[in-house]
Image (cartoon, helix red, strand yellow):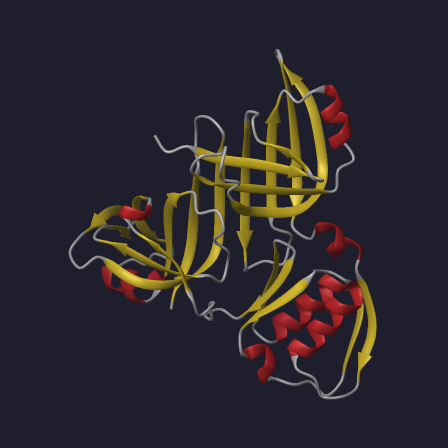
Length: 293
């Protein structure tokens, strides 16, 4: 049996031997903080009190021996809500988190740019001025391609970055305290993962944007795919993945069926990730929505 690594770090205190579960969602398509909800069972009263004012939460996970392997970083974010309640004989502690939530909520900007500047220049300056993230990664040449002769940023930093990205067909999000800016189709150049049965793929890939005919599904609306795997801890939106499968699910005239034949062996850009983690029974998996490159 494959052993699960699931460790939670709350303000430097590591929880690794308690019953726990987590749901994590990361997406490059929205600038709202990436979401995480962690549930821990039967923490001591002193620990519950200590964590009631905690600020940061990190999750590490993977497969292997938890005694010798700390796992890989799955999520890092700000704690925005803490609940402690008793259910029958058990104490349940629930931590709701947002990646970069505190900085996004508090950051404002008031500055006029009179010289021609690219979106990359303006976004970098806003981040430097407000501290909305610890670093920036630009995964798009479009962020440097267009200039503006005069621009005034006045208001909350998130709203200003949203406006710049929307007017230049860019997307941004904060991933583990790093701001990532991209366009619709550019991924990180390095191939991050190969997802196939041998590496932990669960079931068959499924086309997300489905049409009404097989041709439309496979060639027009079928460029967004959903695939599920055993937990892939460090995968991030904008990563480039390769999906290999002889079977995949499709839908024609509202009927879902499994196709075979040539199958799939293609590269995709990760757009959205959903991790489900549980120390005991239940899911320990990653579901990915990715766009064909």
